[in-house]
Amino acid sequence: MRRQKIVEYQLIMDSDSKRRGATLPGSGRSITIKDLAAELGLSITTISRALNGYSDVGDRTRKRVAEAAQKMGYRPNRNAQRLVTRRTHNVAWVQADDDRKFVDPHFVEVMAGVLRGARAGGYDVLLTSGTRDTQLAVYDRYVNDNSVDGFIVDLPAEGDQRISYLLEVGRPFVVHGREARSDEYGWVDVDNYGNFYQLTRLLLANGHRRLAFINGDEHFTYASHRRRGMVDALIDGGFSPTDVKVYNSLHPMGDAGHTLTEAALADPKVTAILYSSTLMAIEGHAAIARSGRDIAVASMDDELHYIDLSSLAGSFTTVRSSLRDAGAALIGELIAQCEAGGKPGGHLIPSHFSVAQGLDSGVLAEPLPPQRG
Image (cartoon, rainbow, N blue to C red; front, side, top):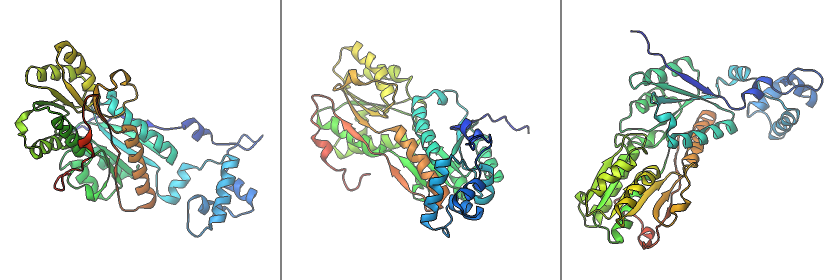
């Protein structure tokens, strides 16, 4: 069978400076380890081992070499480094071949954090797309040709095959989100369960008894965890899960906000709507305004930089958590695995609640029940 074509984009930061390197004044050539050795009166071997972090080089010497390299504008030869360290300083981020994904502002925010963190850490990011049927083949190709040091996985589902494969081959990777095996790999996430437990409990405590929940695609764990938090809050409050009507959008979220809000408002008993994204909440705002009804709105706010929510301050209850910070944490965790080879770790991005005017926020100070979380 003919292999399906896979489109690859390599996002390389500061590529011009990396190609040029620094030059010795008047020489027109790049500075090398040999130049550093001559400047410092040290052997080429010592310079190389200092730059590559070998433990047999003293801290004082390593600092002296690093300062001289920075002062002289030395840039390491990436190919030579690969021969010594057996690392590429490349990481792969394999995406579904979905045109909507690449214009999704949620994805763009995460990518901004990843790229800036990669640049600071001296890594390049290979952003690669494959169809649902070919994604695992992309991972397998990178593993077999050793062209990347690790992988970023996003939008996990329970029992995700990508995670199963990477656990099996033992390569460094980090997941944006979590599924049941999260103690076995590195991850970065927001408290999806806790946030939507709290939002639901807040609305119930303020007298709302008929809610609508406009959620994302529950094939992915972020959305299923949010629904579970909402359901558990209802049960703990003495209400039935049937007191909330759930409407699901496809991923990416956003363009279904208006349509799903109109569907929710078809129930005259609904007094509050939960949204999984401020994109959908903003789209739904027009439908709420047109209805003339007093509807409480509570939403996840991923701090999308192109959206200005200042005009709605005090009108919406939001729980804010930065996707850009999540992107930076993702690449930081992955680089730590690649550099140190240590045990993967989990990172929870903080969340901050902003409560709409007229709502009593006291219940947010209460911890979740011990059996929840």
